[in-house]
Amino acid sequence: MSDLPRRAVTRSAKLATLPLGFAGRTVMGIGKRIGGKSAELVAQEVQQRTAEQIFKVLGELKGGAMKLGQALSIFEAALPSEIVGPYRATLTKLQDSAPPLPVATVHRVLAEQLGDDWRDHFDSFDDQPTAAASIGQVHKAVWHDGRAVAVKIQYPGAGKALLGDFAQLARLGKLFGALLPGLDIKAVLAELRERIAEELDYLREAEAQHAFAMEFKDDPDFFVPDVIAANEQVLVTEWMDGTPLSRIITEGTKEERDSAGLLFVRFLFCSPARVAMLHADPHPGNFRMLPDGRLGILDFGAVNRMPEGYPKVFGQLTRIFNQGDMDAVVDGLRDEGFIQEHIEIDGEALRGFLAPYVEPTAVEEFTFSREWLQAQAASATDLRPTNVVRQLNLPVSYVLIHRVHAAGVGVLCQLGTTARFRDEVIRWVPGFSDDEPAPVG
Image (cartoon, rainbow, N blue to C red):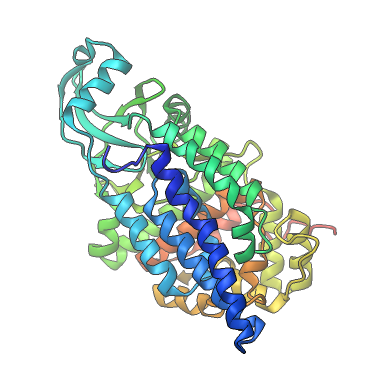
């Protein structure tokens, strides 16, 4: 396959350039220090070159390496735009324009997964995919009972390639430690490996999608296509038309963008309470605005199972942040594992970093914009050891929650949505309402 390099020797060679390159630059840095440069300046140069190499290789690889890069999006604010800009562009290209499988391979996979008589399941099947992503592609077809369906087919060998990436990435703990001393990268990698194994299991995805479809059946705000058939590597669901959220971003009216953004937030916040799961891949390509005004949702491969709903402490700390007690916020984050014992952190620097996630909950109505997000992130765009982003940890239980929040804020800023987001938090996030008791700590 041209879009997913599966040969272990090739993928290992690309990942091996990370630690070897880092070692070489460290030696070069020592030489510069002897030449008169300060230790801090040399360290910053080494870190910057290391970051460039990390993001370059993560962008070149699909699969596990790309998933790690997505999960570490929280830390992109700590890196200069000239480093992460090309990386983001590569990720977007990989997500939006993966080359399709040859038709013969598609037919072979369907025969292997559904039997030699696989065509008997369909009245018609379009050999050209309508969408392609990192581990599979989607074809439009007509089921034998006349229903239009989406047929999601997993790339042959995708699972082996993805999980193989993690075996290689697990060796890079020290490298990431040099950039992000507050992060327990091994724990994050272990969590991501477990989640990617789930994404590879289409039966598990079918179970999640069916649960969402049942909960939101006849819902006035949302539509989820139900599952018709599934096995481990092929998933058949109802077909859903509609306007992609990406087109609403670029061509929608202000009213359309406001409505889409509010429904987008409502869906993400209400799902843990209603379905005990959080859709963990809020990419614009996974959402459609339907003609009747509802938001349609696709792709349930990445979900965070939350049987207790949103963690109550999440709402409590958001409320305390809005009240201005940063000492209590720091204590609460330390209790939850976001700040490790050996790390000291500046409360005001932390306030600046958290503002994009919390500020929209402090007012009755809020407008997201690219300019607002850029202004919020401006204080965190360096590699100095005092950068608060580099001092934070990402507890495994929050890996997917953070992924959703970070990506969600980005989508809302692309939409430029103005709406009463605070109302959604009050309704769906436990611990946020003023009548909730504050945490004792």
